Image 1 (tube, rainbow, N blue to C red):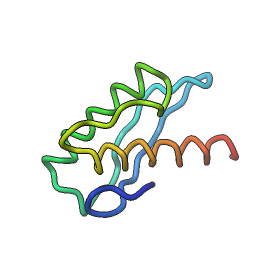
Image 2: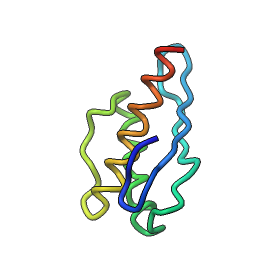
Image 3: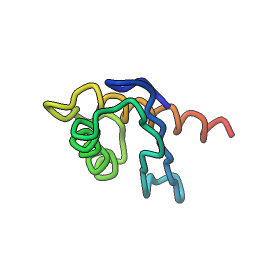
Length: 81
């Protein structure tokens, strides 16, 4: 989880053989749905790059940054599990 525009964003990251295969936003109660919707565009960039080192979505910077940081957090937890 990480901070987005309107609060905490939680994600679920699915890994297979050290590859990111899926990312789902599981909770983002404080996010504006339009910004969150735009921000979720960053998910396809992360999946394509297999990295969180991707550009944020213009117009939804805080939401997309929150998603990126939540993925970083999830990957860190998976690494330590």
